Image (cartoon, rainbow, N blue to C red; front, top):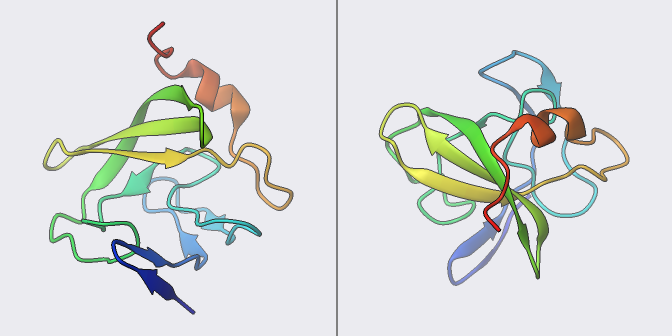
Amino acid sequence: MSTSTARFTHLNPGFICENCQREVQPLKVGCRNHCPFCLHSKHVDRFPGDRDNPCQGLMEPIAYEFNGKKGLTLVFKCKECGGMGKNKAAHEDEVQADSYELILKLNKPKS
């Protein structure tokens, strides 16, 4: 099921991670776009949830930062086109929390 606003389509399906092949469950709150086990994502959107990006490359987690509104945010770089993206970390999810150990191994946020 999806809902749309001007530049955001709410999609939250489960998926199989293309990097580690593990099964990823939907979030209880919000939208998951990356694997909680290896933190990789896929370059599928031009705008959140539109699935309209022809690249379809694997996005590697490269850093994390703190966003005053969203909290802990992961930064991704596409291995195919070099495009960048960000998504809120799901490190507090009750079903499948993002690996906090892996998050801390990423580049530290700039002060």
